[in-house]
Image 1 (spheres, helix red, strand yellow):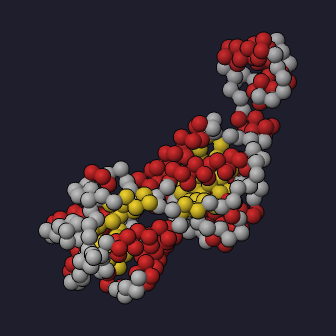
Image 2: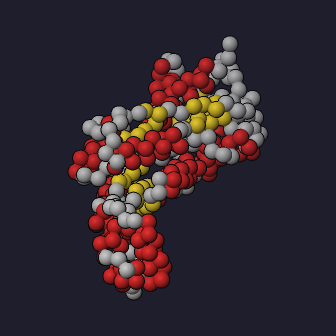
Image 3: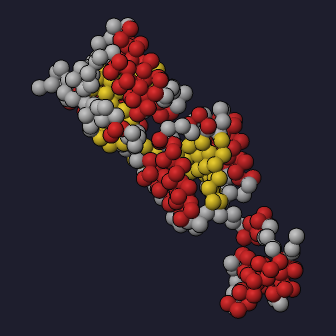
Length: 338
């Protein structure tokens, strides 16, 4: 395998000149630069990336930690797609690492990326607590940014959507349309998003002095089949509801199918609302109303903030994002509409 010394000999320049060309630092005339590139092509030289990274103190890589239970669904497809696209535009490489099934494994995934000398790390945590994330951010000199969690001590290091407030406002719009008996399919309750959306549903009912009916709450796990099962459970126990909110669109699609199978018209008999506004939502029958979460905007904010930190820019204050209700055919007036 060719060495940097051989490249220098073929190019007729010093080893230091070849190093400056490879690192992109220091002045090298265009003529000598071209000779070095020609010598690299002739010798088949491949630079030692680790050695170069040690010299430049930058790998041009950003790490992303997401637990594998979150890989499915349009929400995370969009998150990873835009992360990779924006990193490519910045001339950087994105490394995806699995956070697996526990806080300890999420912590290990972060350390793995830091051991690879990633310039910064982004984590979408599922198991690590807010206090644990605050400690991790404080312990490392490399920036570690957190998506979808509110850190108490490091405002500049977290980017999140207010899931509780967003869900509360969506349910309030159903109430404004005349719905009172509103069923709710939760997401996984070991997920912060799942818990916050459930809290938003309860908050909206309380705000409008509507008694909470525990029988109208069915736990789901983010999958379409959970929507089917939830509707079957509600109907089997004789629950009466004029609207149904599912914590994501996959479960809402399953609910639409189950209601259609039972001959229950949407939205004439039951209005259905989902979350995340997946690409399929406008094409269901009826077209699914959904709360669109600003995934792309959150990723843009995360990466812009991270790159600013890496470039020595000013720390940016925490910014809160919220979703927007997209009303389509699956929502209509309820029995208490004025």
